[in-house]
Length: 205
Image (cartoon, rainbow, N blue to C red; front, side, top):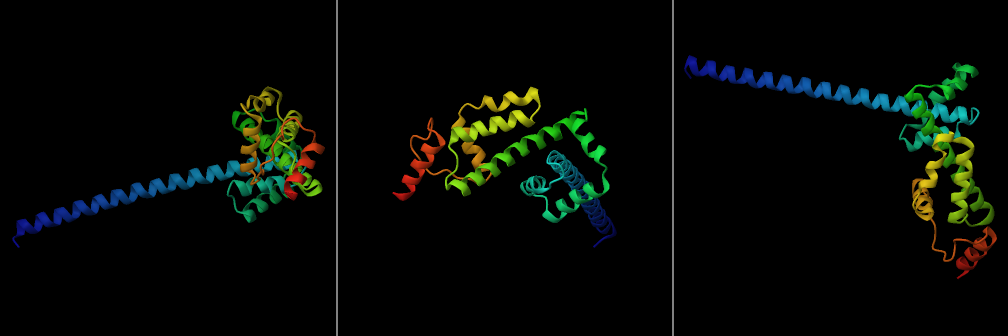
């Protein structure tokens, strides 16, 4: 190989090495940004969980459930919430419910909406255990509206009423919470006792 050919080969390899180096740096920056973005999302979700815990007067069950649905490891979520309880003062924790920044209000809105659904899901589970049948669509929707009015800010209370179909809304709610409804004709408009009776008859058949 002549000296000129050797020089060209070396220049080619040098160019390839530089391209690989640039690609490596680009990929490294991309991973760093992705990790930072993911870390930021996790911190925001943990802050929402902390707001849920404050709304529940320091009880962590609902907050931990939110973290589970947000794919945050249980141990990490529990440690974070426990540290907030141990190291945060009561006035500081209450103050988080009255912050006025758009981000803080957004986190509180998510916390309130989740807590409403969590309470309704818990109520349904209790009724299921006690009565052997879940409440009907209308009763679930009424319970949701009632709890929504109690906890959600006034300017957002109308949102649940926008649902085009109450049955569709309850079905989506059930899917989000891993619940199922078996087919039961004439569920709408009946009292809870009537629905329970029809469900019992349906189960027997």
